[in-house]
Length: 126
Image 1 (spheres, one colour):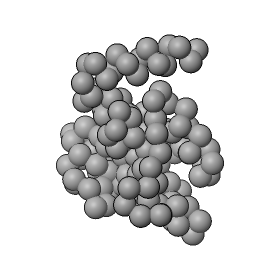
Image 2 (cartoon, rainbow, N blue to C red):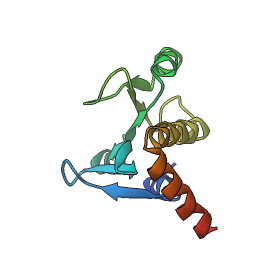
Image 3 (tube, rainbow, N blue to C red):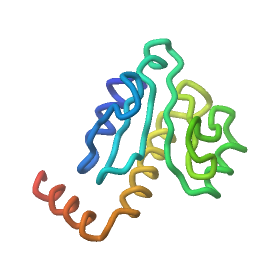
């Protein structure tokens, strides 16, 4: 997977916005104003890309035990976030599944009003 594919996949999700809230390097994807994915553009350029994804704490622990390229979230809550090395032992398919799970987890934490607004917006795009 390359940066363009990753970027397009993230932005294709309903109501996703991109930001650089920390610096010019750290690309953050949000839904409803809440982060669900962070990545360093420099690391993509250097050939060592990784992403921070939110996850269920129990599943995060299981993933870290099973995959060498899944570690506690760098500069994030180690309980709720994982850092996934892109070209490690995690397949692109699993990476996209983890990204989907992160999005859904953050979406489910939004207010019902915001969830409904995003769902209505998504339906109008179909």
